[in-house]
Length: 156
Image 1 (cartoon, helix red, strand yellow):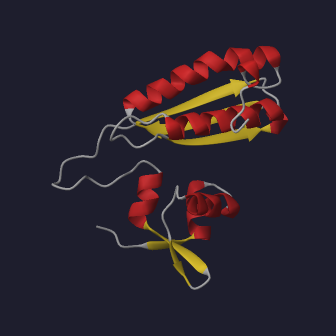
Image 2 (cartoon, rainbow, N blue to C red; image 1 turned 45 degrees about the horizontal axis):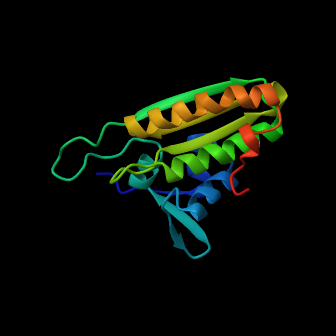
């Protein structure tokens, strides 16, 4: 087993993310880290868990089945992308089944292309449910161009 520890900067570089994004993951509990002085250190196993490369479970059996999905939505404005991202994250965090961890979700918005990408890593059932939910709201978002159907916005 690898006992390597990474800095926030090293994790950001490995994942192609901004350092502030990695720190946000740590603060929200999405990425486990140890604070040493004024800096965070991330264990290899915690980085692997974030990226879906979990080590085998106890007893040497392989980890549970995991699905990765990338949804790309074109023609979406920044307001709608923000609202959809909030809605997706809320749905992912509240929709996990009994004993199942919630799927990990990352949303990326490319303003210059009016394009949004949603990356989902999780169990097959939870991921499928999240994909069905995305499918049901995307048409309404693109038709209205101003948010989720019925004005539903996370926290509103």
